[in-house]
Length: 310
Image (cartoon, rainbow, N blue to C red; front, top):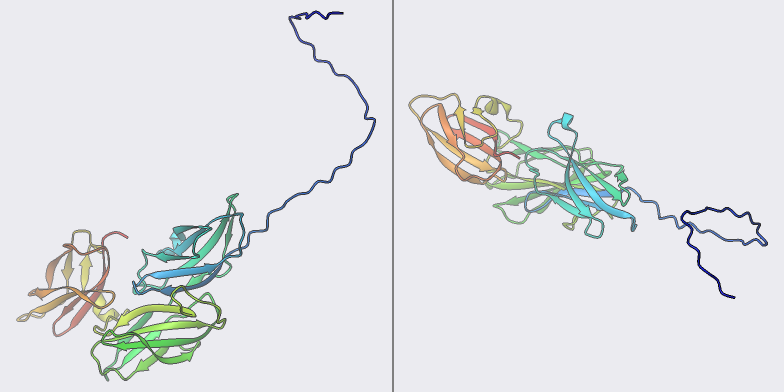
């Protein structure tokens, strides 16, 4: 018998009822990925390049995509600024190249972002140490700093160097202390740095310190952040300086004043003389960043200025 093919110009959809003659049992296994945990910041310390270095820990998890690193804005109302994004399979550290540790204390937070875009923030933010000083009439230096926030501080170490040599441990003070006076200042140029030591010794920064270090200050100049008397009597406009600025200060006749511009490490980058209480300061080839403007005569006037837009 032969079968013939018949072409039908339209289609039928047929539903044929049927019944199962048997029953199969299956086991279903759901492979749930490990829960992504929030990162833990180890410390925020200052590098030899005078930039903040943030290090953190993270439990291994292949569901992690990357890390976000945030810094507080200068204006509190601006919230948090995303400064870096670090891939999961890389070193758990980043350097904030836009930071100026000698200018202010910064607060940082780190988040872990999984492959679904979920973000898990570190439970404790870390705030850096800003070290400052004042010179007394006895040629001593009063060192002061803010508390390090982020881990429980066991003590503060104070490092010192005369003439720019390697910083050596000078003394240690309890965590409740934020001010010391150094009377041993025989050298005209003394450098200091403060260090917060964690109660958990396992906390290490990428620089090899079991702690978080502050900015380095130089006593070549009494660049005190609290020297409001001198800073308020000198005007700089505009500030930040893009091309040039107008400078005005109380000027005593029949004399000249020495003008010096220092970077935040205390190194002079510009010098000259001024013969009046008003002059124009040109940026020239100075790099973007913060500087200290000093006009010195019978009275010394200082002002922090910003060159360029950061």
